Image (cartoon, rainbow, N blue to C red; front, top):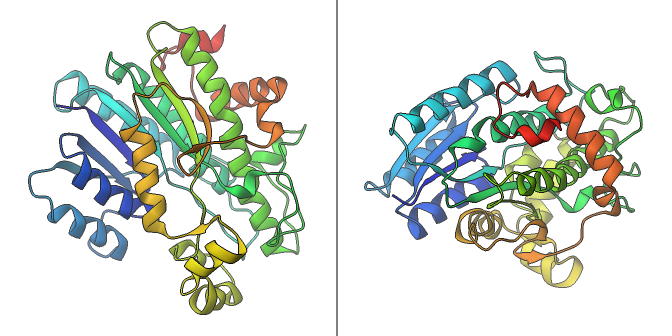
Length: 333
């Protein structure tokens, strides 16, 4: 078999198209799709099942995984690791960390672990998942793919006056302060999450390359574009954004892409690129930041070595990663 692909957020807007592209284009892979809610009451998970049903020969499974609960993430990692060791799944070829969470209408929310929900779902939980499963990758190597955003750049944005930041006081990352401007601060938390994700990709590659066992596992982080048809614009967003998506963003995405901002495109386009970068190009040896399928430069903050190493250490701490539960021992040197 070609190997196992793990995709989080598999029932998201881009995730569904990524799933379809994987099953259609790379049928030899074993696919593990994770979603928060696996019940038949979840319309998006049912869409995922409908796609899978079109490919009856595909080796797929859907797993419940609540990224807002680190105990659940560690339990899932143990389950998958044991299953691979027992031969139930082939070795991992790719882990694609697609899931995220935002809220543009409320104050910051804390998870059961006491962390900001946006940061935990989009970053901390993925740190735990990836570092727990590194020793289950194929000996030939593979890929870790993270998902960024154009909003990770520390520059003027039309959606918020607040720039994303990795503050000196890291408590502000895991416990952002409430603010009357729910929309502006919500977008800032999202941008900050993506800046954190982008930054973390670089020390991950550094430590992977330091360990001969993992030097052929490459990490990339992709800006998939502004997805005008994403259901994220209909979740935890004010009515004005929902109306804007319905009347402008969704119907005019091709025109916005051509005449306003080339970052605008569809979830279908993003989903294909996510799977191509994460699986199709998994053996190309490339690392670092991408816009779509093109190598690009991230915000300079992401390239600052001091910031990278401080974030790396804090991410290990937050995710509950230690010498006993990860094979990447050089991470603690």
